[in-house]
Length: 397
Image (cartoon, rainbow, N blue to C red):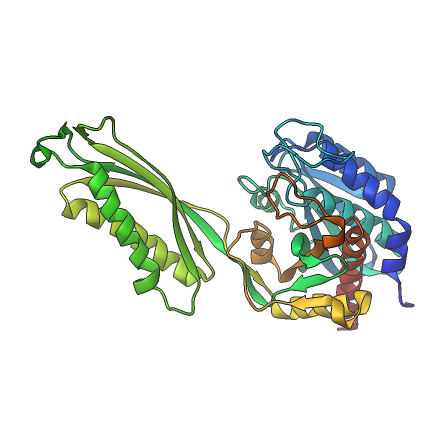
């Protein structure tokens, strides 16, 4: 099969990429509400002649059948927006008050749709199969797991899976790759401290829940510094604290909640156990009691090293040797693509969207977030070339 110049082809489709991205950007939908976006995706894939399937409410799977039995590669894009008002002064700003694509999911969807278009031109020659995953609710409860539970990774079985994500810290025209641990696991904890109320002038007659919760907060800070290997990154953050009634009343109740971020599955279990034990231990030692609820969030996202190497090689081939940024430091942010990577080897890479000359510098989850749309052909070409490279390499054994 002759070499395919996906980047040149994607650049020829830039107007289409921009149109799709701006259409989605102007009509943002929150997690599990992506009905308009799903309909757009479904219609586009069907116009390419691909079989489509709905899963997890608003999720869409497009199925591409190549030549022979072969391997199956999955490509994923998330579709949901954030509950945030768009403050950009551009013609394609959000038309929906209080909702905005502030994390680039509109771009992810546009890139994967056009990647599908690029790939279908070679359906008669590509060995194996491709599944295009358009996922709901990455920003909220996680749409990846429901898709998987409804069979997204089977029929045909997915042998490798890839995804991209916009990164406002990397220049447009570049991509970034991390080998191994790439994103953290997230857990939340919610705590209610129960004390005993009394008059503020007679604190010895009660159990001050506010004093107890203050000691709990201090004790939690020692978990990272004294229970975790110093070279292992862990964050325990308390983001909410509430308690008390009046200045002269000893509070019988205080509440706090926070997040735990870990990069190792083993460390994750250790820290979860220590958080609960510390809270209950401190409260008990002070005569109070504690209710602790730990909620398990997304797992660690760990790139398969050989698949990350494939992305690096693809980036150098498509963009040039100096346009691939290798990052040895994982992010303590979370990403539910991790669930896909628990089912098949693969890699999650970053698409540069920064351009200071155009004022594209604002961080994700900001009301001013935007992307340099010159990055869209890069994203589409990378996804198409990764799928092609994986299938061709697999066919060669």
